[in-house]
Length: 614
View (cartoon, rainbow, N blue to C red):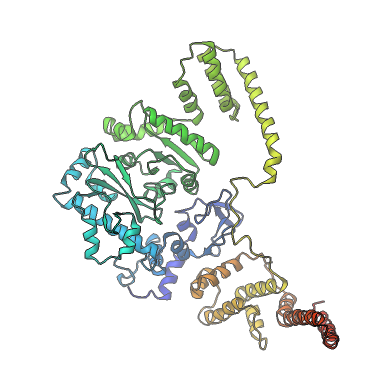
């Protein structure tokens, strides 16, 4: 792959709005001049992730990450800089010569993570090849066709087959793959002698891709049921795969989720794949376990609305109830339940009624969570006696107490009145009592809550715990910002004899800017960060862009910065040194040295006062 010239990189950058690229991963909302959303690099509940369309950079005020559009993809998808340029070019429909494209479309392999992802990509291709091109894969292919999947769908999801012959280990051995890396993939079982054998056999293979679209694990479904084998077998937890974080199909569904403004959560992989084949492209599923707070957070970054569409049988209804309780405690998503006929799952419904009926059902069968919960609570109760009806009302009232819309509340009360034969006024009186009790309980808990941070608050990060800047660093930071953004200030500082920043990092950035301005007339932060290259210094440049500076600059302001950096800072350093020497002389009882140091300290203090701006 040839090195991409700077002018080509700049063409890609100028053709791209960073907000459009970031918006593929983060739900952004306008606030002031910038766009804000939940940070994709760490978990948070209050948006602190900012995108500046004006400067074409991103910055998280919580974890401190920042950069331009290329840096965003490099950090999020673990790709190299050239690969990030290619991805952005493809997104913005900028033609790139083939010499600038790598032969492989997989992740960068210059890191351990990249190498593990590459092994998973190779395994996925092997399993897929066995399924669609070999005789041993034919029974599995027939099974998928019998399930109603087309060849196009099988290709889209790169479904595969792991045969009983255990071909994966010889496949990697032929390629001389690193043994230690193979051990860490989760694709093999290791015996006491350190020998590896394929984990998956006689299973239809579902590649599990991370949010960036790279295969991070697999789920294998037994082709023929066996009493001693689980129907579905997932890869074990690895550095790539955490089942509580990953959502099936999230990478493919994200564009449709943004377009529809909502996501539909299914119970299983086949439900998602079946829905996709019916033209419903915004479906996802959890990893065969209950929904988790990490998965909820990933959804919240992308949309505000979630539909839960689980199976219509009893286990599916219990799963919906658990999901709604978790979502009610840990999210602000607008929720709806898609209620299927009893005993059916989404895949079965589509095959029985057709694609059009399936799509229509997903729209017309939506109901508010409370409506589902009322019906779910009633499923297990006969309500034939007064005690049964009273127990049901006591369960329902805390749910009704959370309803804020008067009309909606009135509808539910009328429904209960009709179903239970209880006077509406009596129900309303009990509801008000429940509301008063709930308010009193919250009031009692408030002092304890004030003593400790709310659980939903993000953990304090290293970036937030940095010490405040002293006067010298504030002056250096402000002057460097002015130098970069104002050519008059740049010229003024460049003409100062023997000028340099005291702290090395600021001086390095200033020196790099000297080279940058030799070939660039105007300063652009998004462009300059690529020129800087070193991650730590790139981050400092992005931090500079968050400096709250007045639009206009005055000569007096620049003179004050220069005075602090060139005059006061050196004097302050000498003062600190002399005071340390004075303390040491006092400890040793050296009176002559103490008198001499006191004189020098007084002189430095006078010099310091004289250097201070009036």
